[in-house]
Image (cartoon, rainbow, N blue to C red; front, side):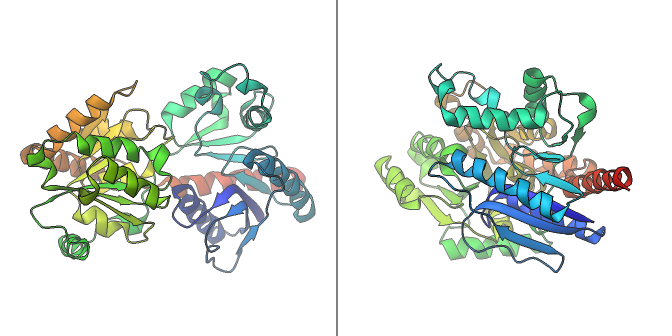
Length: 382
């Protein structure tokens, strides 16, 4: 059995990319061969076991949406040549048998855009790609990972319930803290020259604009000196680090902020942190929120994030309501940093919630559904 996985961009530190590789390995273990195709490649291609092949298939064009159009057309040819039993998309595009719904509903995100934006080729392309997945006359199975976004998709496209397979979150095993987590955390603090008495506020995620790093810096600026001088913001992820370092200096918090770039040792940062901060502008899910929850970290997150519902259900932190107001983030950050006893309670609540809730089987459930769809196609064609 042969499967094709498609994505617009591969880079080593992306949550979607990690999910795709985990799901591919599980499908491999279930007896499939998998070809992974990416239109754009940042950094080195992934190291994959025998049975999983990675192909960089650059799309032609200057703009991203032109490249995605070209990529989709090239994929149509690859599918015809290789006779895949199922094509699994990790971004929306035509020709998918299953779609892993990691991206937010495009129609919802652009509803406030002007009439003229809707005349652009970008809008026409991305709208068509979304309709090719969710329209009622399609049969693409949707691997849904966000209750919030599923509601948006169904409100816009009236997509049938039976086409959705709802998945729990998925925390990779290497993100769970080992018994020696205090040693891990202390080692990381020593490496970054952060004192044991300082409060370490952690952000994790590439794409700093969407993740709200600017909001985090402004919230640090608003802290009273008594709290600011004993707090450090550590930002893990890939982006234009010089630009954000300059922003931190301009906001006069440069000495309190550390940008470490993309890292593979995120558990060390989780073990060292006192608080997890995720003031994203937009986030379909936010897998890092589940990782923070599993690490028993109190979380401060914007309610727009799909997985913020888990923080609320666990009573493991605070949500910044929508529409976003910077002053609310500032106030909540101060409250959370200023109360050690409350942070201890949120941490305890997180441990209790994780112990009784399935937060781990996203990849397993997704792989099982992919193999089910692929086998049904084999049966129909045989």
